[in-house]
Length: 146
Image (cartoon, rainbow, N blue to C red; front, top):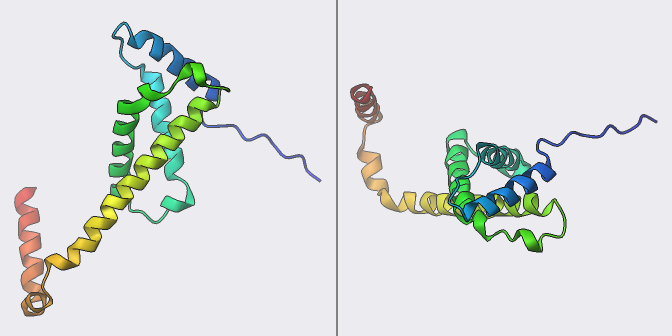
């Protein structure tokens, strides 16, 4: 039987914990979040979006969800308590949970918009519209925007 190879993680939890700890200390002095810490947040966001739950979501919606998750993460990461962390993976778990919560909230908003969409259109109006007229109207607005 072949040996199971150790799979390399896409981020180092120790590095994330150290950067987050350093930022919490520097935040008192008004310093900004490091670029490396933001990069790690982005990598985690991308990793969460690769889960099977999010495979069927179109890329433009994924980008919107990712930007909302990053915004929420940066706004509320100060709630992470370094002194209460029992292990170095606590930061990774906290960040992942924050991103998952933000994704679920964004998906809920998108689903609510999709449910309201049919209510905006009356079926009698749609039957009276000629498809050729609709296509020409769409293409004429696209050419004027470009």
